[in-house]
Image (cartoon, rainbow, N blue to C red; front, side, top):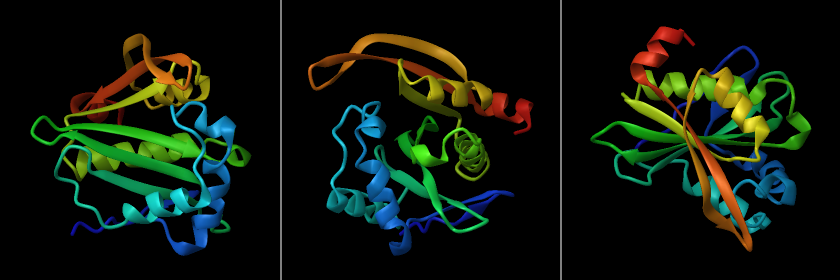
Length: 185
């Protein structure tokens, strides 16, 4: 099995989910305002726990394999949110990234900092050729994160998915390995 290692910056660490952060994850994963951009209902505490722990020691070799990292404050070990990488095509080096953060930690740059670390890890350690993010067109905060990361908008998909009865549109942002090297994240 592939073991996910921890990554650290000045303010945050990316690490596998541990028991001590599962209640905090269940809190924000259970909020409607968090789930509204995910095209799924809020998670129950049991579903939140199960999905966090299922990803701790997964392989990253086949389409759909995920690396899920908790984003933890180095100052006080508080769970701030999470970042995830999903392998879409190993042969072509295509990886999708995403993030979900507790609204209480919003507006302080944690998501951008964590996503930068994840991008660097994917390009340098996982030999990604292209990393992309799909986000609800109404999710301005995630759009701004993509732009701060230096990702470029590749597509605006109109009414391409459903959230219950609501049609949702998405943006696709991406970065190639050569673009990453040029930005010196």
